[in-house]
Structure formats: structure tokens, C-alpha cells
Length: 369
Image (cartoon, rainbow, N blue to C red):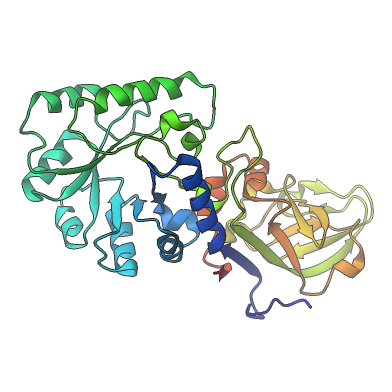
């Protein structure tokens, strides 16, 4: 049947999110790092586009208790979704902005303190409340420099009153297992963290987890791996797939040899061909860069994307697909088990993070639970 049960007949794009797969990925990482290492979850940017509230609830049911977000607004929204649970930590990676300390306190959010000014402000305004300190060990983004850490270590009053709940850093090249910066950052982190009051340490995010136990410390912070992206790009993906995206077949048409397809006439048919027009485009998050490079699946068959991706439509060559598989208002699989997020990212010249975070609200969402 052309229509999928539970999906409105008018929907032209469909995003399916498997919450059990997210939970299974979290458990897989937990088994990998062992019982002495906590597994947090990075759910910033709406859990990489999949929905922070439903993803967090699934992870809470699985046993996760620590969640990392990017901004105070993200933290407030998620706190409202999960409620005032004292056993759940919502940590804000960007830390408290100059006027944001009150909101952090009001909503029970834990800041990641990234510079001496944030540390001083939190010490004065939020005495006794928990915070995490971030050390820059090689990213040159947020975090205390080695000089900052030395100054903190030299001033016994600098952290007075702060309930230090963690010290963290972030690896720059963990997906390149042989990159020398990985070991250098690990060494810098150990040296600098030892200068601060004792607290749980966290260095590894998704790919860093797979560098080995020396990178695990007391907490790991997976993000992309939870959502099915491959944290080990030089090896087969160890994570369960989480998302599938389908687009409705709006029309199938015949075109002559030498006919051009799409804006800019970037594809010219080399033979008389059949072309299917699909009801999704870059407004749905299917990147324009995938034109003439990506492929979709119709039934068990691959169909190459031809021409440019437009705002609402994708054109694919279905000449070699049996007509019986081309149902009127049937569905083509844009992302699925045979062609996943990492595949589309490769063919679009980007990374899987961007594919996931660009998935549009225009896609009808179905959560499998």
C-alpha cells in the first residue's frame, strides 16, 4: 500500500526515530567503558535534531542521569520537560552569560565554567552550587588556558564556595586514531586537572571513547554515537541506526535522451529515461550539495539522484527499477539501513552531524518506542 499506517495522507516526507536504538547505543557505550565510568548524553541542538525531550526521556528510562546542552535556553526547555528531578544533571556547555546566572539557579542547571570571569561570577552569585570546569587542551575554543589553571591553583580562594562536580576537556581529533594530538591532549589534561581540586574527570566524547580506556576517566560524553553516526570512521559502525527518512513519490515521468533535469541543467539524460520526482528537498534538510551525487532506495533498488536538489523536490533516475516498485504516492527511502546518515554526509561533502541537525520540522516525525 502507498500510505504508511499512522502517517497523515498529506505527508510528503517522513522522519522515523527509534528511541530503543538510542537507548541501545547508550548501553553499548556503558558496556564498553565499564561500571566505574558514567555515561552522560549530549542532547544539545535538540538531540542533534531528533528531539531533546523524547530522546532524554528514553535515556532516563535506560539509566542516564547526566545530560549536556549548549545554551541556557536549551537547558530551561529540557528542565521543563523532565521536571525538577534532583538526580538529573543538565549541564550547560556555554556556561553562564553575564546575565544568565539567575536563570541557571532558578532552573537547576549546572554551568560549565570556561574562563576566570565565569568562575568568579559563579563563586560570588551561586555559593555552594555545583559547576564543571572546562580546560582547553588543544581545541583553542572554550575553556581555561594552562595559564588560567596555574593562577587558580595559586589562589586557594578562587574556587571557594563552588561545589566542583567535574573537570572536563574536549579532544580535537579523536576520529583520527593515530593523530598525535590525542595523546598530547590526554597528557595535558592529566597535568592540568591534577592542579585543581579533586573532581570526576571527563575527556572523551563519542569518538574519543573508542580510543581506549586511557581516555575514559570517570565520565564519557557521547553525542553523535547515540544517534547512530559512526564514531570509528576507519572501521565498521558499531552503533545501531536510529533514523530513517522517506519521501513520497509525487510523479514518475519519461524523458528523452539529451533532456536536461533540474535547475542549471546539470544533468543530461544519456538515454530515454524514467525519472521519479520525490516530495522532499533542501527545505526538509536534504542538502543541495547531494545533487548528482547521492542515491535513494526504492524497494530494494538504488536510484541515483540526478540534477540539483531544489527546495521541495528531488529527482532520481528510476529507469532500471521495475515499474511494479514505483507505486503512485509510494515512498522512496532517503536514509535507511542500506544508505545511512554517514553515506549521505560523504556524498554531500559534509559530516553526519550536519545531516541530522538540518532535518526539518516539515518532515512528519514518528517516534518508535
